[in-house]
Length: 248
Image (cartoon, helix red, strand yellow):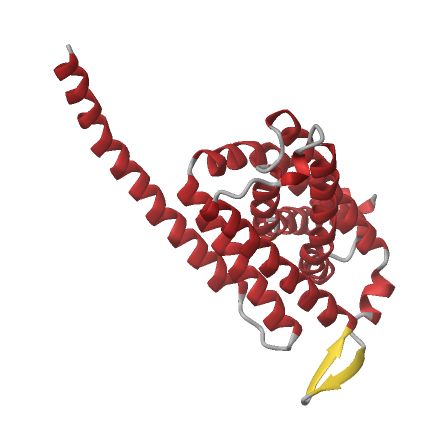
């Protein structure tokens, strides 16, 4: 615990915590989409368990640093591209994210109900948790590699992950409620997941897309949609008021 008296360690903790929160944005979006298909009484529990899995996965991966380093070793070469265990995980996760996002977009547009919730929601709940757990492993790779690169003490890395997940647990509720209440925001979030899936596949194939570009595109799109929501709210309010006056 010598790092507690080191200013550099506290700076590393603050920086790493901030980066963990930023890197967890895509995880929050994915969890918000998945738990939105659960019965209302199960959504909060689903979010907490999902983010708890994210924290546990990241800590376990940190404690298995030797195994993570072995994932970078080349397993095979396809068309001149060297593929490692990490690459296969990223490609698999990207394909899963593409498939899941496409299905969710189809459900949203076609109005197809998920039959997994038929038996009291239990089957849908556990399948949702499993899907969250699978994607947590993929999303955790970047955060763990970032932690290893920024901090030298395992205690700092674990503390940063725990603080970041605690912040995400507080923020995930309002974000999920907002996404559920606005269909256009949900469609935008699903589009982000498609973009992230493509980025994961590209990174697995040694084609790196800087995440800064992706996050900027996401932030810009959200800002434009928020302006659209505000504009629609101002347009609808006078119409409703006029209808109310005419009815009277």
